[in-house]
Amino acid sequence: MKSRTLQRSRADLLFSFILDIPALLMTVLFIIVPIIDSVIKSFQDYGVRNIISKKPGVWNDFANYVYLAKTDGFLMASIHTFSFVLGVVLLQFLLALLLALILNTEIKGARLLRSVMMTPWVVPTVISALIWMWLFQPQYGFIKYLVNLVTFGNVHDFAMLNNPRTALAGVGIAALWKQIPLMSLLLLAGLQSVPQEINEAAMIDGANKFRRFVSVTLPYLSPVIKVSISMAIIENFKQFPLFWTMTGGGPNNATTTLAVLSYREAFVSMNLGSGAAVTTLWMLMMVLVVFFYNRVFRVQDLG
Image 1 (tube, rainbow, N blue to C red):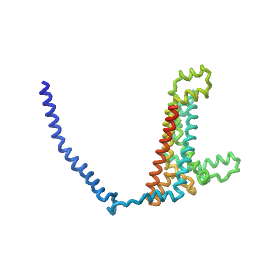
Image 2: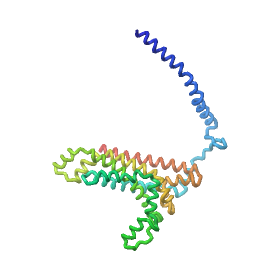
Image 3: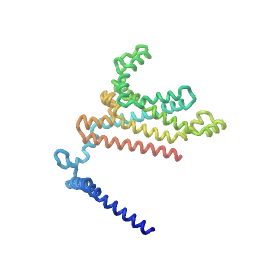
């Protein structure tokens, strides 16, 4: 019986293989062969061919990176990017943690507040930018009205996005409004996973609220904090829609970040090589920042 079953299985395998031969031939003929042919042709001249002229590319000896090093635009864009990321991520974490702690208490309307506060995160980034552009509008914006009201009419020309000293902060406020809700929910989920038994034991031992928060809550919240801040760093490092919609990199390049600079170089100045160089350095910076952040967090966990 075993020999007959084995013979049948072999026959079935042979039959299925024969049926698959046409499909294999078609795959080799129409997919694998063209790929191999294009790879061989592209390496015949050891360069990438131009799509239009069919001429091979010419190595420019890192000329695009030399160009960026000679100009002040890349350095200023890097400073603006790191300033924006540091300020927004720090404030975002502190405000989100405060909001999560408030929502973790037994206050009335906590469920409704959790649902309502997610509205900014759901709104598309471009729409958020347009909303804040209207709020910061220097003639009839709501922020100008509030400033005029608080200063008793002493400030008449408040224009946050038109001032090079405050424009980056204006975009940061819009970024905080959009990003705080998600981090708050993540931190709230972490707070609700802290074992109450350990909190109660610390309370019996005489630990006050601050001591319990530092010694009990934060260690359990550490993985959530690590993921939340990593997401915030990446999100703000690659932030482009808010800047381009609200300020376009102005005024006087005060909000030109690496994202805006790469777009300008590639699609405004039509210098694709320089734009690609900015994007490459921008990506390397973001990878290094996240890498060192994770290393610091890992050292703290081991300690």
